[in-house]
Length: 172
Image (tube, one colour):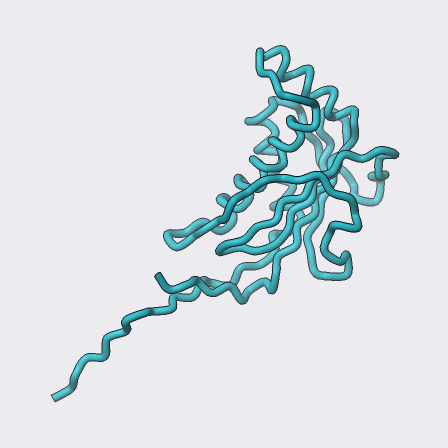
């Protein structure tokens, strides 16, 4: 007689998680901006984008089923445009940076849910924080990046994933 084997703590694995292609980052950001702000967007040539003199940049660290960092950088001019749009809608923010922080936080959630959600997906607490390039993961580490024009203001997006393709779900 064969006795069945019972796994008390199964350890399911996820299909490999890969870094999104530049086009995926671009398309999802454009879709997000159209919904969130209504501003027009365009695809920019990465080589033509110059870093603003005083950039506004925020980083989000993901901990959970997907682990990594997302950085979004733009200019003060984009903050002015976002502030004007949301003031017209009667939405107040404590300061201009809070608008950009909300944009980065919401886009990071939108990106994660668009790329990797399944029935086992977990995403820890999310909060975009101001950063500088010294706070980024190393640029020589594999990452995806793109440039999108938002109402003619360049936005740089960079995404790093920790050990892509090796994510394992925790047993419950």
